[in-house]
Amino acid sequence: SLPAEVTIIEVGPRDGLQNEKEFVPTDVKKEFIARLKEAGITEMEITSFVSPKWVPQMQDADDIAFSCLTDHTREIILVPNTKGILRLYQTSCKAAAVFVGVSNSFNQKNINKTTEQSMTELVPLISELKEKGYFVRACISTAFYCPYEGKIDFQDTLKLCRQFAEAGADELSVADTIGMAVPSESYQLFSMLVKEFPNTLLTAHFHDTRKMALANIYAALQAGISRFDTSAGGLGGCPFAPGASGNAATEDVVYMLERMNIQTNIDLNKLLRAVDAVKPYLTRPIESMYYKLHT
Ligand code: HMG
Ligand code: MG
Image 1 (spheres, protein in one colour):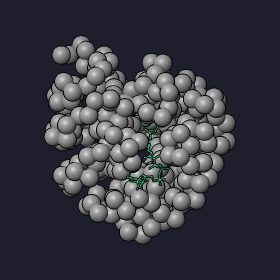
Image 2 (tube, rainbow, N blue to C red; image 1 turned 180 degrees about the vertical axis):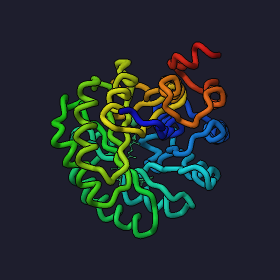
Image 3 (cartoon, rainbow, N blue to C red; image 1 turned 60 degrees about the horizontal axis):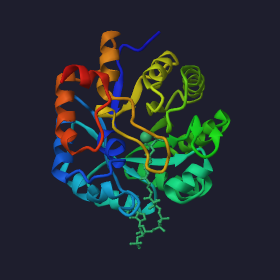
Image 4 (cartoon, protein in one colour; image 1 turned 90 degrees about the vertical axis):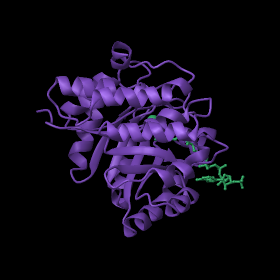
C-alpha cells in the first residue's frame, strides 16, 4: 500500500541551479531558499562546497551557508571531499551530503577520482561527521545508467549503498542521474533497497530527461519509498553528466501526491512564488506543467 505521507527533499538551490550558465545573484538564491521554506519545505540542499572552478555557480556557497540557517529546516550542503567537509565545519550547518557515482567513469568526470578512491576518502570522514553529530546523506549517482558506461549492474549500486550504510550514513539518496530509468527498473531497484536497508532513510532522486520522473516516482512509491528529491521549477542537471536535464519538478510531484491523498505539507501556491523568485535569472524556460498551467 502507498504511504499516507511523503517527505520532499528540495534540491532546487543546489541541483537546480548548479547547471545554470549565468550566475544567479546570491540575494536571489537566498530569496528562493526563503520562499521554499515558506512553502513548507523541511529538508533542502541549499548549496554545495565544491570547487568554484568546476562549478562557478556555487562560488557563493559560503555566503549562502552562513545566512540561511533556521531550526525548522534540515539544510544540507553537498561536499565531495575533505576540503568540502572542512568548509562545512566553518558553518553552523549540521547536515552533509556526500556524493559518489556507482560508475567509475562518471565519478572521474564529476569529482576527479575513481569510485574506490572517493570511498577511501569519505568513509572515515562519515564516521567523523557522525561523531560530531552531523546528519549524513549519501547521494548515489548513476545508480541506474551512466552517460559513459551505459547500464549499471544493480549489484554494484547495492554494494556502494552497503558501504555507505556501514560507514554510518543516515540516508541513501539513490539517483537516476541522466533520467534513463523506466518504472520497472525503479520498482526493482527500490524494492531491493527497501528489503536490504530497513534502518536507513531511503530517498529516490529522479532526473526527468525522458519525462519518466513521475512514473518512476510512482513505481518507487509502490516499492515502499516515501522520500523524494525534487527541484522547484524542474530545474537541475549535473554539468558532468551529458544529457542530464532537470529533476522531477517539486510542484508536479506535490500536485500528483496531493491528488492521490498523500500528504506532503507543501503549499503549491507558495511553491510557485519560490519559482517566480529565480525565474527571471534563468537561461531556460520553466518546464513543469503545474507552473505552466498556473502562472
Ligand atoms: P580537483 O581539481 O581534483 O581537486 O577537483 P584538487 O583536490 O586537486 O584541488 C584543486 C583545487 O580545487 C585546489 O585549489 C583546491 O583547494 C580546490 P587551487 O589550489 O587550485 O586554488 N578544491 C576545493 N575548493 C572548494 N571546495 C572544495 C574543494 N576541493 C578542492 N571542496 C573536486 C576535485 C572534487 C574539487 C572537483 O572535481 C569538484 O568540485 N567537483 C564537483 C562536481 C559537482 O559539483 N558536480 C555536481 C554535483 S553531483 C550531482 O549533481 C549528482 C547528484 O545530484 C545526484 C545525481 O543526480 O546523480 C548529487
Ligand atoms: Mg541530481
